[in-house]
Length: 379
Ligand SMILES: Nc1ncnc2c1ncn2[C@@H]1O[C@H](COP(=O)(O)OP(=O)(O)OP(=O)(O)O)[C@@H](O)[C@H]1O
Ligand SMILES: [Mg+2]
Image 1 (cartoon, rainbow, N blue to C red):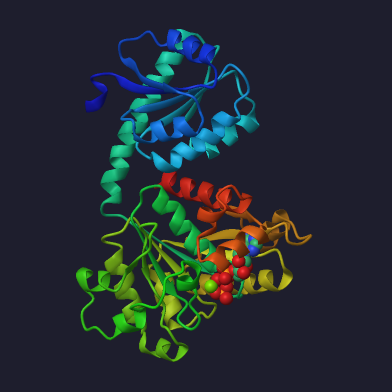
Image 2 (image 1 turned 90 degrees about the vertical axis):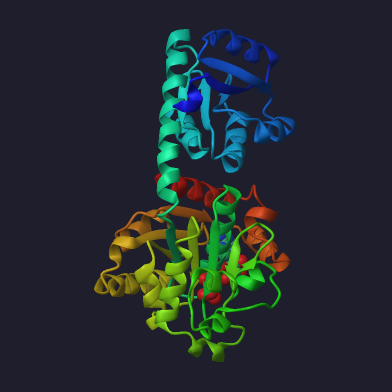
């Protein structure tokens, strides 16, 4: 790797001065260069966010905890660095939590200087080359993700808005389209006052990138939003070819195009689902929602769209129906299970701020962040 020629630049993070000193002592290798050391606190977070480096090495001779929270926060702001954890041999639970936090590799602090250095070097090299490939692919291969469910109120808009927010906070370029043409609520969730809508767009004769982009409204988070028609009667102006053209055009410019949908499986919805890469089928743990989901799975299968379907369970814990019950009934394992958190969800809607922004530590928010990270890792 080009920038590895001058050595791997390491930011070292550890709570205690002794640990920082101990770990520095292990890295006496000219290819590994500690460029800065911090504690995993607010100040460290601020410094580590802007410091040029290749690797963030988080170390402890104890059981990692604060360290993992720090990793998670860093992963959202620094998709350009490799995050490694140096800790005593970890159990499976810690390792899986580490992976969820965006840590690329857990290295045993007692495995000896040589092994530690080799692990850091290979992890940094591998991540660097993977990242440059991903960047190349990402420039022409964006992903379109639709949030769909045949039942109302399961959390399509909540997930679309917050997934968009999570990805934008990870430095991805995001377009969010409100395709709930009858009762779109993305504008409410994001407190975007009236503006151009998809119905205005549909009256254009051209669907060139510059035209489509001119109908996007920039949210303060940085995501670009296409609002749904301001009144249900305008929904009729939009035809499947518009939907198709808008999504196909936007995917040439954005890393992710997130589409929020209504509950009907009409022509416009089908057009959108056909151009989509991933259909997030959102369900709740309630019998009616599950039956509707089961039926719509059959319809999606008939449309030959079943391979794109990814199950998301939202409001987990709201009833006695378990994740296992849902997975069994729908014969699919969920890609994400988002906890029920009424307080965070309501606060977000009432304020017109994404839940991930106004309640980032809510369990529901954390799971959406984690899912966004998994999406990026898979890219
Ligand atoms: N994980 C959650 N925990 C608790 N409440 C939630 C959660 N997700 C969403 N909600 C709440 O559930 C309600 C419905 O959510 P949302 O509007 O996102 O659903 P929807 O599927 O888009 O509905 P519609 O079909 O009407 O468009 C909202 O009040 C929202 O705040
Ligand atoms: Mg909705």
